[in-house]
Length: 290
Image (cartoon, rainbow, N blue to C red; front, side, top):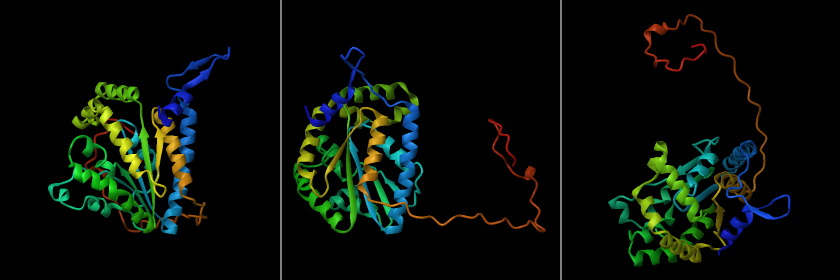
């Protein structure tokens, strides 16, 4: 049993009034507290991003893990109130034929941040050590070359001034099954079940072996992997965002007070009648003024 699994079981233990241990299968934070904490952390993210912008920092955050582990949900909460011009999400499609002939890391380099930017990679160059390895999309020689050069590549990024943060979202077999079944039932989530996701269920052990070998090569002192227990989505979101805030020392910069300017007078300008415009049908009528 690995450390993450031990922590997961320890978290689920609860004691009743008689002092006997009981098991809460979910152990969720209540919705009200979750929303309060999430908003507080999101406000801190705004403060942190302003520091990144003003100080010209370059931040790269990688999100990796099992299918349905909740990576996208965390990224969505991180970016919810951040400027997309400063904080960008990078989610690359399958490589083209031309990209397949390039140096492996070449297609990721153009998406690295400039000064004052943060890039969030929803999956990254670690595709080679995960899905490409398990699904035989790369040769054994290409895979071994990746394991040798990836730590060197990441050291180059760090030496260039990039702050590199790597998260692995750990989810149990049972929880992934529950989320897959939920996606099958809900039409608006069914698009999340690609043929690759379905195949990943059959190759659970293969993915486990690939992850363990990947960690043995790439969990380095300069760029360690931070494992997020993702069995409870709300906890994973709060814990990941909280940790991200601790990895970048920042201060609350004093903001210049904003004063809204007065609108200019209309003068001789006369607006055309609303009847000349084509409006969207008000299936849900509003009460505000046009």
